[in-house]
Length: 192
Ligand SMILES: [Zn+2]
Image 1 (cartoon, rainbow, N blue to C red):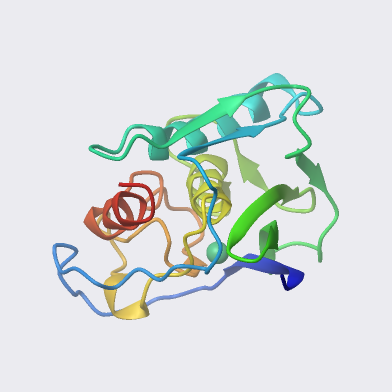
Image 2: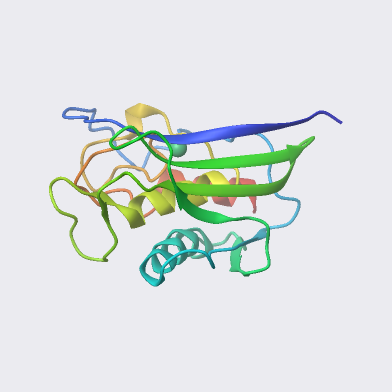
């Protein structure tokens, strides 16, 4: 069995104009490749502050809520699927990184790190014009954590229909907090 690791990134882009493709179209999402053997995985958020723990839980539950997929993220402080904050590459480039460890076609571990250099918005309201919305980025990274790759850019309009798994985030927005049809299709296909 081939062993290795993949790194999936959410990179910041100051996108001002993108296509306005309908989010109801299907087939835009992409699998990373390996996936979990069962429709559940744990994550360890215990090193995070209370407000960051809320951000992590928000990202996880977006995927749990998709029907009919039985997918379930479970918070467990003794899991080795560590959710952390730390230095990545300074502000306004990569916002967060999810590392996916796998053996063959099976994910064996994930880790997730949110860049401590960013100006994060950790609330559930509206981020400021220069802020990065933690809940949007968390929802995106937890999608990587179940094996979902980036959505085709034609499905990434600059409005609330923007798929969570679009590769770039538009600063100051919360468009990617809520899953779109394309994101839901991904989890329903990977974990039916
Ligand atoms: Zn990404």
